[in-house]
Length: 446
Picture 1 (tube, rainbow, N blue to C red):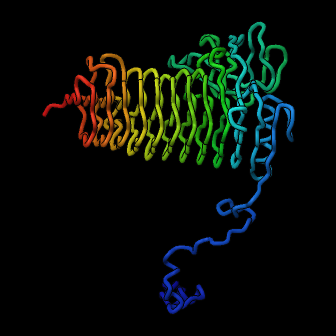
Picture 2 (cartoon, rainbow, N blue to C red; picture 1 turned 90 degrees about the horizontal axis):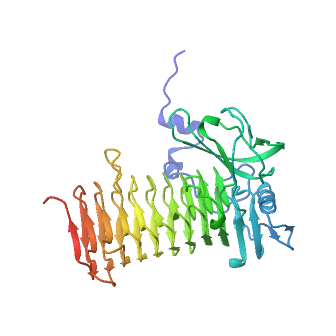
């Protein structure tokens, strides 16, 4: 028997509704709002705003857990995460890590101010003594060394296929002599022809594929003088990968031989009232693909570069920050970093350029388009040929409005704003410019 299409009336009757019951329009207006959430098994979207959650205190000589290493912090974090989240409160003291602290979801890591310091051991690098294939889960080290089971390590080698660098982060989990088992398989070849090495390099705080984490009120010290460099795509005082909704507040990230704070493909990260200073590379590094980062009321001082917008960082806000005495650039923005706002920042004594729009000429439209530079103070940028704002490549639809751009040393050959020959539309309005040999160097052909 052929099926008949239901009439609208019959369809509503099957739902137990009539046309009269639709007078409020609620059926087509979306679900009703949740006004009184309850803790319901399996529902991770709505949760009551509890007055108290679990807190574990950790100290060197007192607290629920006592110690001075990564192990005691990790144990506390794993404990509260197992029970659905909560706070790990680090008491005053110094914690010296042999491995990164891995942050689980829905935790708060709270320090006790400047008196809570997390640092790391000096790095050590040794060569591998045997080949390891991509499916192996072990390595063999050469000679005498100080590596222990539980250590965080960085494995590096030259890739035999394309000559690029292979970088792998792992933990040593078992040992027989100089043979060590790794926390995970390699998934890359570490052949002796590529001169593979093992180094005790790792971020201080790190995470992958987690969300809803708060880090507050503590100091991270990377022990720069005793550590080799670790690229900001792999490490930093804080390094996050593929995470969502992280808040860093009142955190100092200093003296890392690499970046202060770096996050890659992480969305809705808030960095507020933090200080990143004296790091070898970048102060704050919103990494590739990160959406909607907010960097507010923070200081980036004496790094190689203050704030580095990486690739494809969009809809971000940098507001009320200070970038002072960074050796290269106060702010650098480039490859597909679009629709961001930089407002009310103070950018002073940059070694080369105050704000750099990079020339990423690798594709059809890879430039930092549709960005707003508004109400910033940009003072004393570069050497005698310094530039306060340098717009390179085919950057377009940039607005530079209501900024105070000043040179207090001497005009020399200094330029306030340079617009490259290939740049698109650049809007300049109501900027105060003082002390430069050239106010605007517009190299575009009229």
